Amino acid sequence: MIEWFDDLKVGMKFKSDEITVSKEGILRFASEFDPQPFHLDEEAAKNTVFKGLAASGWHTAAIAMRLATSCRPFGPHPLLGAGVDDLRWPKPVRPGDTLHLEGEVVELVPSTPRVFPVGRLDFDTEGLLLLTNDGELTQLLTHPSFGVVKTYLAEVDGDPSPGTRRRLREGVELDDGLTAPARVKVVQRRGDTAAVEIGIHEGRNRQVRRMCEAVGHPVLRLVRTRIGPLHDGKLKPGDWRPLSAGEVRRLYEAATPSDDNSPEAENPSG
Image 1: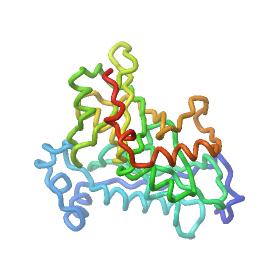
Image 2: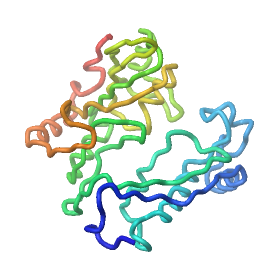
Image 3: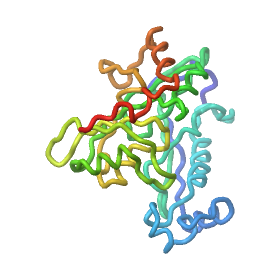
């Protein structure tokens, strides 16, 4: 058991127990806490976005918390601030699925100052991630009302037609509503795939992947390349560096409400 921060080493790995999800468990949890058709009725679920019976996200989160307590490196001490609330699942959890958690110490950041991620990257997404202890800047960069665009490079199946690209720009209807206007540009075509640059200022869960899926071009690889004006093409995966005073200033300027910050203000026709 690890008692102190100094006992942690980069590369340490932790694995939880396993829990197999049953149909009965899905129905029992949903009936009490999340009574929606795709969690309660197999037939009704077939005609939803889940294409079949699936566990509630709250149910999966509860299982994840249970698993996290079985593999935490700090023994009986509380899991406060351990990032469990940041977990995301790439696909629905269904009857018969067996879940476990694996953790690895990838970096040691002393608690003073304590930093937080500005937005998130899901498990299958690469790219730029900003960490800060500046709460005001975090609010400015993440709240959709300030219009700070996050830019992604998505490798998608197929080659989106002009009409499809227009749909992505103008808004795509998802299960949680119509997306805001986006910047969309095809930057490369190769074989049966295309590289599409997409800029959005919302922060919905797996939004770019769901947008592309909704228009018939599933994402094969996704990389976040820019947060507002912040971009670093030389930074290697896993590396980090402090921001310069000028970069911080430009981030604040980008978060100043302005018509120039909206996706519609710069929407190439490619």
